Image 1 (cartoon, one colour):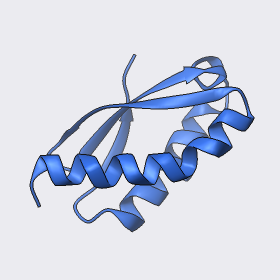
Image 2 (cartoon, rainbow, N blue to C red):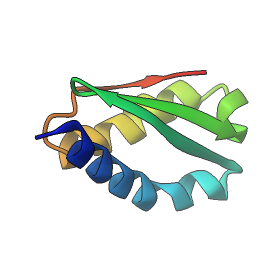
Image 3 (cartoon, rainbow, N blue to C red):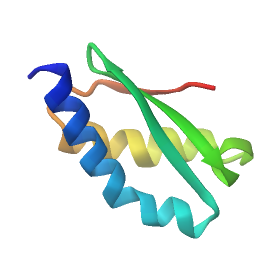
Length: 78
């Protein structure tokens, strides 16, 4: 799958997850997808929350790996 298609699919999954982040005062921004690694910037409350690593890995990464073929990992960028 090409990077552009993967970015579109990743964005679609993020749009489904966004209401849960917004409910807690946060959000995320898709920065890049490179060789199966999704780079996200956590915004709002998510940027400073002590549980943001758990949200990123257990929540967002798990959903993306399950729903988007080729996604291997999610990394937070600042």
